[in-house]
Amino acid sequence: MGVLYWSINFFLTKKIKFENTYLSLSALFILIFFILIPKEISMPNIILISCILASIFILFYKNNKNKILNLIIENKFFLFMGNISYSFYLWHLPIIYFYDLYFLDNLLRGPLLFSIILSLSYFSFKFIEHKYRYSIININFNLKNIIIILILLSVILMINNLILKDSYNNSIKLKFKTLIYSLNYLENKINYTNRVAYYKININGNEIYRFCTEDSKEIRLNPNKLRKNCLKKGINNQRIFFIEGNSYTAHFIPMFNEININDSIYYNHIGGSLTDNSIDLINNLQQDYNEVVYVTHVLNEKYLSRLLEIQKKFNKDIKILILGTTPHIYSGVKPLECFIKNVSCEYDSSEDFNQRNLKSLDSRIKVIVYNNLNFEYFDPYKSICANKICKVFDKEKDLITHRDGSHLTIEGSLLMMQDFLRFYKKTYKIE
Image 1 (cartoon, rainbow, N blue to C red):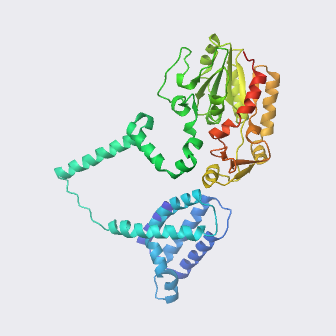
Image 2: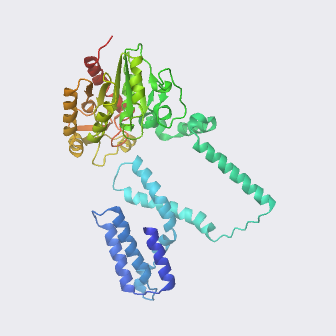
């Protein structure tokens, strides 16, 4: 949207001359006032209004000899800011992002950020933008230069291929990644990746997002046509928990991986809602297991309805275990920022119940379980958040439960272990 307005503005100034100092100044002052005042306006509308006002200012601006007007518009500071404006634009977002990521908000935030961005913008403008802006690059396409260009392109392609490859398939990238991690502040101080990265979730040491997704390439099947890297084999063939679902089901895997039970545990990751793809595979498991339990997380009533449709296609003895929803966080709380800044952050669970109408979902699930012997229900909510106000990051305990507003960390998942084991012993026959 902004690019469109600036493009139209550019062509208008080339074709037609509009000059009205007072209209131009009025647009400028309204723009400044609009930027500074608090407002409840969506970002697209803010951009639109700002672009229109700035365009009017530029279109109608008249370079005149009035010293007061020149002092307002063409003073040295404004001219300096205009020169470095592009560099300022490039620098401001990463500087603000990393500052807010590591430091708490305080009165010095604004002046300090402005000083840092201004300094970096000046140096990049002077030594890069201004230096090369008007440089004339002459390339003679002789044999020597063509060879150099081809070599550079080959190097770029090799580097690109290295970047695109997964580190576990490329020893060079793995060594480089290990080196970067060894130098990284967050890795050394708080073991950041191992504690909050979703791809660290594993079953029997095998990362589920590498081996257990729909598009996983490394597939080795056992006689039951189950992926070996997604199976935690039990002591006997009494029971298998066939866990299937999206990322909301995946954050239960650390809990299942750590619990000490004799049953087999298998995980199949799907991108969206439940499908019919695994039905035959699950039904056939009854040939080798005394009991097959299909497990999935139910996020909302739509997902629950889909589960009921799938259940009708299972053999009549297939059991269903519904994993209830876990807490979601609202009110702008950012778990990872709290973790990095080492400050305790809280959320209100009642807000989550109201936003997602969880009482209605919970009631419907309990009715289904009561009327159908094949269904069981594990409600994990209080394992994560037992009170109205709960901590997403607890500084004293050094515990982070969420990696974002709706997904658990590995240590958040492990909070459910004890409650699940009690539920397991009460619900399932143990031999």
